[in-house]
Amino acid sequence: MPERPGSGGPAAGDGPVEGARHVVLVGLMGVGKTTVGRRLAKELARPFADVDEQVELRAGRVIPEIFRHDGEEAFRRTEAEVLAELVARPLPLVLAAGGGVVARPENRRTLAGRTTVVWLRASVEFLAGRVDPTHRPLLAQADDPAEALGRLLAEREPLYAEVADHVVDVEPFHAADDKPKRALARHIAALAVPTTPAAPTPARAPASAGGATGTPGAGSAAVVDAGVIG
Ligand code: S3P
Image 1 (cartoon, rainbow, N blue to C red):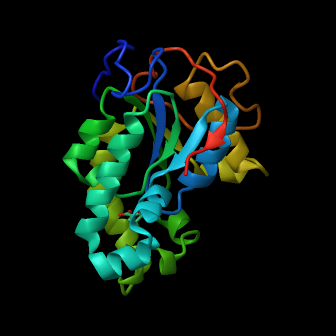
Image 2 (image 1 turned 90 degrees about the vertical axis):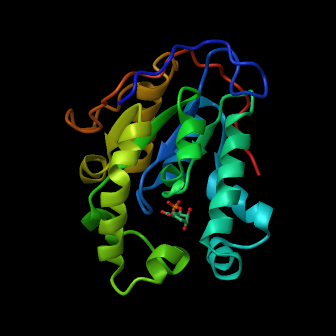
């Protein structure tokens, strides 16, 4: 994984100020980026934004309709615009990205060096049991959604690894904790923003879970108003 440059005073409009980076959750469909992201934003007292939701607002259609009426390429263009605009915001945010955000090199460049990226990782078996294909056009079109997920995982694994500062395996949290999303959010807060005051590593998370790889996110946490962008 690439070494990230330190917190180097990006100008307003070019990413977060005060050395605190946005925390961006990436990973395949169904892994829990949005729900964990919302909880993480609360832990960090930051605003939360979901890239898919922002794309839908901009397009005035839900994602399956965007794919049907405008095509995947149009969806990807809007997704790239929305991501770049959110990353350019001066206050540090928590962002949940769509599973395919890493496919475009421009998005990987947008994330590089200006955000702390956390890859939420899980097996195809786990994801296939959780994801609703009717709201996921890439799966809805597939004869075998589990097979399609496996193909997407194989294609994207190296790309998630390329952008990730931290990798968190979510399955042990689901196996060990009756509130896995909360446990994950606390774990990620401590990993991604080590100076966050109230973000201990959850006591009940298994020691092997969420093994962080890569370099820790740089900079200190700037506590800002919690809220949801949208
Ligand atoms: C996609 C994932 C979806 C959404 C779109 C395409 C993908 O987001 O952006 O359906 O290419 O993997 P989630 O990962 O939030 O489901």
